[in-house]
Length: 303
Image 1 (cartoon, rainbow, N blue to C red):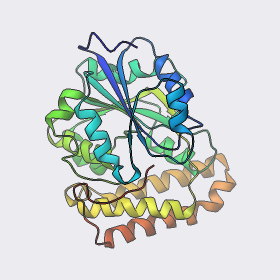
Image 2 (cartoon, rainbow, N blue to C red):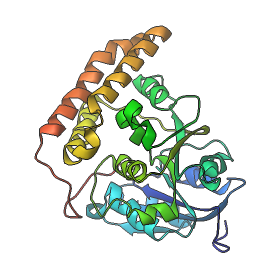
Image 3 (spheres, rainbow, N blue to C red):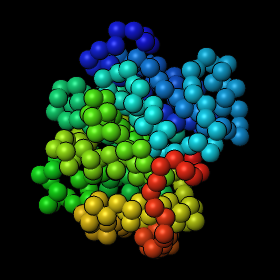
Image 4 (cartoon, helix red, strand yellow):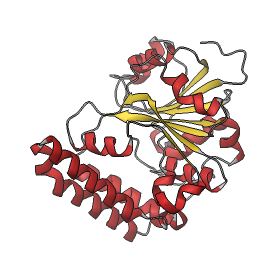
């Protein structure tokens, strides 16, 4: 990986890291093995961890910036790293995505390089046979597509769907639009920026050929808390929420039920109502909370 010859089609990877001792070496290896792409830097931001992540990264010679836990912010940590990126394309990744294809990066950025879109996101699959399997299939279908402002009347909130667990953005456009506007967003920072992209006339591409595995198995309490944060985000950003939070969630819920029933996945079907109830109650609680977005003035949990 050369840090010289920075120019068109070059890539900067931005990846926050926390308690990643079981993942970081394989993750880094998968990045360094990418083909047909000029990877000029991998910007790891290590939040002070409770395991041996720092030791492992040091022993492996990985470069990283270390920050204390109270300095972590989903939006601000990514924003700071992206604003100093050297590559023409910024690729945001989460430490827990598994890349099994050595052409993943080149496929992900291809529509941006071609000038067709200004941002892209990858197809995410899960290795679990849980409810996430069906939410992933709903949100990340088999065919690629492009969305723009013209799709708002039909797609509503889904027009702003984007994931920085595995997504790419033109560096010039990210900087032009001011990133996340210096806001400390504990969740949905990717949707926040996607909204800005679309409303400024730019396009977002979903690249089904660029695949990662991103697997979770959240408890009901964890789901409730995540959706509570999402509800708080929507309350703080009514200009986004007005495009149909309930309709988007309802469409996903129906899709999950239909697919699980078709597969006769009785475990998922048995837990369907509690799972959806946790999401709904969390979203409702978040919308009723008094929390407001602000600059960096509070502690947030890591992913």
